[in-house]
Length: 135
Image (tube, rainbow, N blue to C red):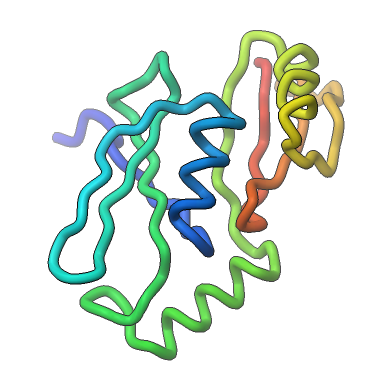
């Protein structure tokens, strides 16, 4: 029986830039950062309070997972903002939003009352959108 999700992937345009964004702007911790077989870099980050739930910051490149054509298509979709990084929870959406804006995080929607709570919509430095939600 599956009991949890340990890792989920966010495709990024540049792993080093994504690491800087998730670590220094969003305040995530680094989980793993290692090279595996040639040019493949296994890079994970996680919210400080949830080390058991890690985000893999993956750069689509030609290799075991993708053909050159597939990697280029994924990169193109990232550049178009067609991917989402998911939903990040916070205890105070307005306060977290203000802190992140002060760090230079771009938001496309300020904190707004929704049926499920307060939500702001942000964008990482690869163009992936994310929700910031206070239930």
